[in-house]
Length: 250
Image 1 (tube, rainbow, N blue to C red):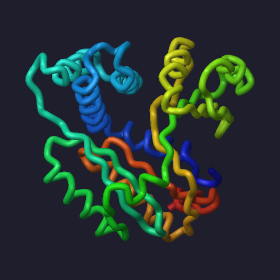
Image 2: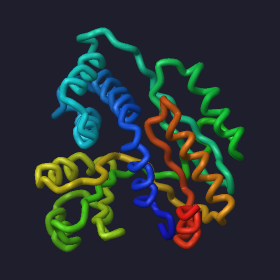
Image 3: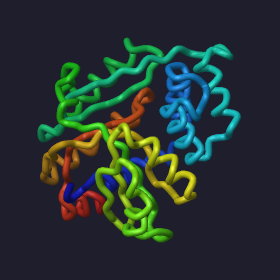
Image 4: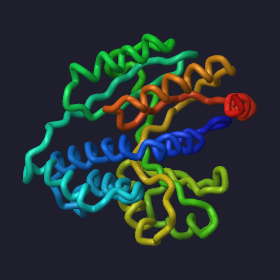
């Protein structure tokens, strides 16, 4: 993807989340709780829980919080029952947007998501209205400096890896969903600084935006990310570098 690409989006999101650590912890705790409920408390036997715990540790969440969230998920201690919900729609400029939420009250979350769409130039659609525009992939980003792209390629020759490339000085590894856990486990043990390490959704095609639509699109996505029940927001927008530079200066 050219222009304002996936890694640029991740950097922007990471900066926003770092500034709101309490909200980030809440989102991570919900993911750990649901993962433990669905797959059990054994981290080694539950890939989703293992990934959630890795993300929590990367965010410097205390181990007590992690263990308590796991126990709530398995029912060992009393806790709120969460439900996973996916919302799909279109934003400014015809950009596809998909939002994964974990909520304890769908009747609260749905109107809040719908309002964000309707007040910011978007339209909330039906289930399946945009999900077909995305592919599920494993994405791991190694911070550049300690290892080269060629060295990573050599390391992962025997793994199910779809793509390895250097982007913004960092090494971006894309895997199939089935191959993700083995690659992730291998690289975690190598003790690299992983800027991203998760299953995600990558757009099959992108929509290039002009400055006005880009500003509107970034605004609606920011609001969706800030919604309390949102876990992840996926979109297929592409903002050319020169337009993103103008927006960043404002």
